[in-house]
Length: 329
Image (tube, one colour):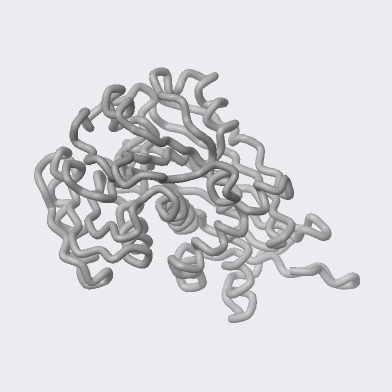
């Protein structure tokens, strides 16, 4: 990504289709995230907590800058989450990512951020699961059947020996559509079920990926998450009752400072203390699961560290293949 001394590099626009065509697969995503979080553990990254505005209740737009010099990745993501967009038949999450040249600061690419967000979020869930879930876990439950459900299905199917998947959405047709679309892709039977309890109770891996609400609308109740299970709270604490969270033996997040920033602004009012973040987990500073019976979880709020790491790889592949639309400077 070096800029020539006598030639300004082209500025590319990469569409959603081009991002998907050049994005790394699930295993490579986890490898990139592992590298990035190890760099973070050594203090060699810069990732300030995201800053945002909230134009309406439950709607938010966040600015997320990050620098990972070891991956030659620096940029910023501007991402919007509007849950009400589903009723408008518009994406609930959308955004753009600007990738810069780490040597000159010149922008190299502006790319659609939707699929990058989905990939890095699922990759972070799986990265945490490597340390917090039982390695032989073979059953997965997913609450919410949007984009995150699809990316998490692919990520967990690539990392665990899945034999059974259950999915639930408050709109049953979405759960059926997800099962029909993804069953052949992941090669695992996917069963749409009619209640939240059925995607939590008795399953070894659980992902809650519904809408994010500042004031939780708890559906997951105590006693549902089985001893020995792992959960990824993609929707913050929105779907979990305080009592259910209180049953967790280990709780991590992707960045403790960012979680505290959210607490200070009124989120996570009744959230239990987290043990540490993913950088500490990946580096071995903090231990993950130590006993088979432990209930474990991660609540990743989304870190631009992963976004820019993936964006740098997307740009590299797109540049090699001659993809993207040149933009005038």
